[in-house]
Each structure stands twice: as C-alpha cells, then as structure tokens.
Length: 181
Length: 199
Image (cartoon, rainbow over all chains, first blue to last red; front, side, top):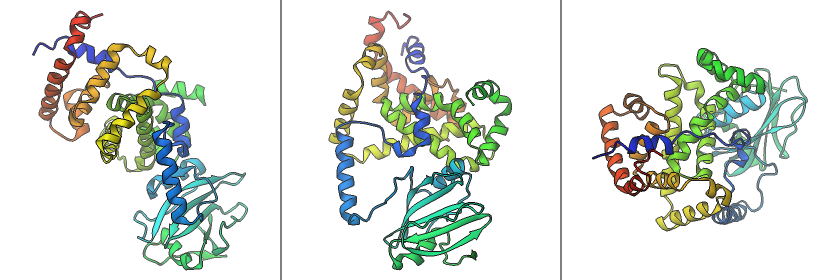
C-alpha cells in the first residue's frame, strides 16, 4: 500500500497535547472524579443516588468523602500524601467489610477518617497523630481509643452489631495488638 | 513551588530516581513533580485513544491515582517511562471494558451526548482534518488503536511498544500494519483534498 503520506499525517494529527490545568485539581480532589457530562451522566447519577438512599434507608454518610475508593492501596497512598499518616488497612479486607473512601479532617493536627461498611453497618476509623487532640468518634457506638506506632485510632460504628466486624478492616484474621487508653 | 517545578522539570532525567524514591516515601512534592513531568504524556495518550476530552480526563485522573497507590511497587527493573506507559494503557483498556458493559445503543447515545457537550469554540478550533483522523483512529480495534497512539503520539519504537504491551515486536508490526491499511483506506479522501497531507 502507498502509505508514505499516512505516517507524517498521523504524527501531526495525533501529536501530544497539553493536559488541562484542572487535571491536577481532579487528582488532588478525587471527589470530582467524574467529569461534568450533562444529561445522561446526571440521570445515571440521580438514579444511582436514589437507589443507594433507598437501600441504606437514609442512613448514609454524614461526611462528604474526598476520596471514593474501594481499594486499600489507593486509600493508603492518598492518605499518606495528603496527611502524612500511615494506614495499615488489610490488603484483602474481610468479606464483611466494604471500603467507601476517606477524607481529611481539617485542623492543625492532621487526621483522616476512613469510611466503610462493616457487616452491613456504617463504620468509621479516625486516625490522627498521637500528639494531637483525641479524635472525636463519628458514631455513638465506639471501640475504646487506642495508640499504635505514634498514631491515635478511634473506631465507631452505627450499630453495636457491626463494631466487632469493624475491626476486620485492618485485622481480617480477627486478632490485633494495640495499647488501649 | 511553581518555580521549583520548572527547574526540576528540566533536570528530572538526572534525578528521577531520587524523585521516584521520595514519591515512594509519600512525599507530596515529589508526586507533584512526577505529575508535572508526565501529565501531558498521560493525558495525550488518553485523549488520542478515547477521542474524547472528558473521557481523557477520567482516564488521566485514574492513571495518576493508580500511580500514587502503586508507585511503592516500582522497583526500577524496567524504566519508569515504560512502567507509567503500562499504567495508562491499562487504564485506557479498563475504561473501554467498562463502557462495553453498556448496550451498544446507550454507548452510542453517550458518545452523542459527549460530542454535543463540546463547546462551540472548541469545535471551531479543531481542524476538520484533525477531527476526521481522530474519529477514524477511534474506530480501530483497541489493540490496534493503542499501538497507533504509542507510535504516533509518543513516538515509541516497535521494541518499546512491545515492552509496554508485553508482546513481541513482530506483533506490534503486524497490528500497526493492519491499522495502516484501515487508516489509509478510510482517510484516502483527505490525501487527495490536502495534496498528500503535506500542507
């Protein structure tokens, strides 16, 4: 085939372009992860939101997640870069645990809140530097606060039945070694 | 920070190992440096592969989030460029797989909505030829399209493409040859109109 004209044309018309400036914002704030496509996306989003609200019986998250992710590695990396805190979520959390995402709690002392479902109930793990103000539990049902490797942990769950399952986020085998306060 | 970025961008090749190691330790500035250095490559591959700006932004964002979560696994056995190319290629292919789950009707409808959402100004700015080439490339099978993008957007050699895709250089040549035939046939009218594309 006579294609001597084709390769220069492809090189020119498929050339590298500059990334839009807002890409950095989207990497920094993954809550804006989805693009602003009108009509169809909006309809899908509204339908999905309605379904989620119906399923959860309006027991959903009270905080807006900056990172929505089900990946332990992705959440750990994002938390590390945005707060300096080290999380130790199990690479393969127990089947009863479903990660939802994380967000940074603003303040002088960096803290992060990891949101997930444990045995079907909303659960939160709040992690902060040991030197900071003790983290405030999100739900009334809490596990005693504990310290580990210079970080302070506070676990809470929407229902007592989910509290034990909430520990499986980091300890899928069930056992853990911490210092209770 | 911006001043530092511009300086470091120029010398990143000499210090990329150091920057990557800092990023592996969770250094936010190092991640920003990597982002600034590679953002145009990542976005361009995503754009040329998907043919759609909004989709390209989704793919590029996903690529950098994956970079953030997986950079600790980078051991330097392959070049960082190859590793990153693999990451963005996988994001492109994953994105396509997710879209395939929609029915062809909905997929076509989404394309139509996305296209109509582009600003009138942008449409004016895009040349007709550029648009036609992009549209034809977009219709290539995924395995041929990614080879075309790596070859003509990134200028990679057959060996380099083979390393990124995990196949042989012969396979790359074969896919490119098939793509050339399709592109040559579908774009032949442009060759005549534009006097052999040399304008």
